[in-house]
Picture 1 (cartoon, rainbow, N blue to C red):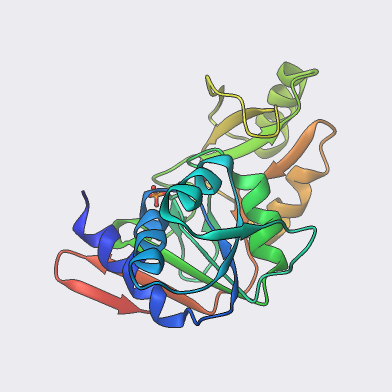
Picture 2 (picture 1 turned 120 degrees about the horizontal axis):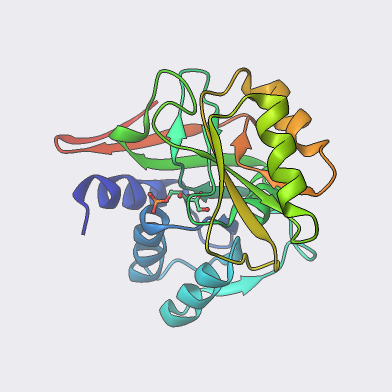
Amino acid sequence: MSEPKRLAGEKACEYVKDGMVLGLGTGSTVYYTLKKIAGQGLDVIGVCTSVDTENKCKELGIKTSTIDEHDPELAIDGADEIDANRHLIKGGGGALTREKIVDYRAKEFIVVAEERKLVQQLGGTFFLPVEVIQFAWKRTQRELKERFGFERVEKRDFTTDNGNYILDCHGKIGGAVEWEKEINSIPGVVENGLFTRDVKKIIVGSGTGVKEI
Ligand code: 5RP
């Protein structure tokens, strides 16, 4: 149990109202949000970003729908790194493609994270996850390394909810806005974990409390 994650995850519920369609992220911080939503008996419809979150909603009795049926009013999701421009690296849990579809479709986006996720430069402490199709993944791996100068690009021992692989790219991110688009232009790439859409609030939990930035 992580107190900073709990503080951040639970605080996000202050933005949740009965009747809302909510984009629900993936990971241990958002799990605290889900538990709080259920605990408060809030009547929401969750649009889930992973099978894992879908299962958790089922256990907690939170109703769900799909992004085909509903664009969320608000999405709440975690992050692996957050820089001063409010750009993110996500995908530590391998759910980045569904997260991007849901988080980008939402009218507003709130990020919940523990304080250590705030960084000077993206890629400094975490790697950038990239979802790729299985076909020619080694070719895609080489291209990621050569074009973007990553120190190493490692295939995770994991298959995503979409049946694809994740390549973890180690190294500093040159420009989040440009790279988010350019990485996706490589044939074989499905999606990457750079998130540069506008963020309404970043809710940060730490050992001393919770703050919003
Ligand atoms: C999953 C994600 C998560 O939001 C990210 O990894 C943060 O997870 P946690 O809240 O467990 O630290 O992007 O793909």
